[in-house]
Length: 268
Image (cartoon, rainbow, N blue to C red; front, side, top):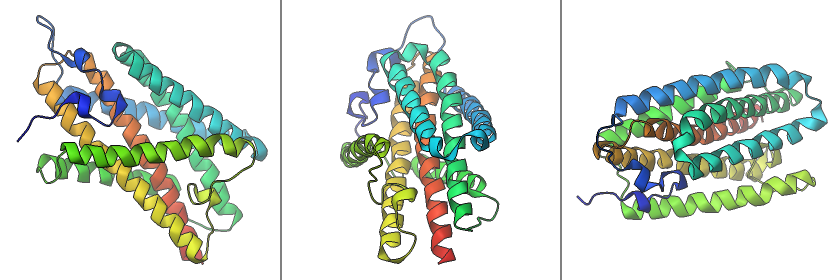
């Protein structure tokens, strides 16, 4: 079986092959180290989410979307900063985690408010259901990868990467349009009909994006494993944990929207 090349990855955060190269006389990264760093960043993100949920009620309804867009822009800035300077991930990753957590908390509260306005209830709450689905997807992808059922081959990376870039471009178009009150249909739970065929199309789009986000984990697992086996420096554990957190955050967002769409569908 051919070895995977870091440069072939469709995840731009894994393009720094020279930084994953072995350095003599230094401690090397390990799978357990990456797991630990990812867990730490996840905890920080959860704390940020709790902060976001706590401040959401104090944000005026009209300003909620503006705050969500602002925090999304900040997280994107931190993301690209970490890509440009991977060695600073030990500092940038925790900052990203807390800001991303706040964004997810505010976004989840926004979805909760939207459902409440339509008198729709979700058993256990949207956040809990979305979190459980996210963890289930992470576990499923780990099992599929560890059992070699799904592997990040060149064709796999090309297909998933193309889909990811297409989705990202739609996001880039939709985000500024929202500032002018122009809604891109189906891409968000707030711009999708809650009944009829439009609702089904929205759920289908949601499931497709969730699938692509989940498959990105397979690509991350494969390339991180390869670089760790090659003896990458210990500091790269933070970078690897960071890019895994990015994928998990994307999955969680899609899970929140999916739970909300299904709840609205069941109400109808």
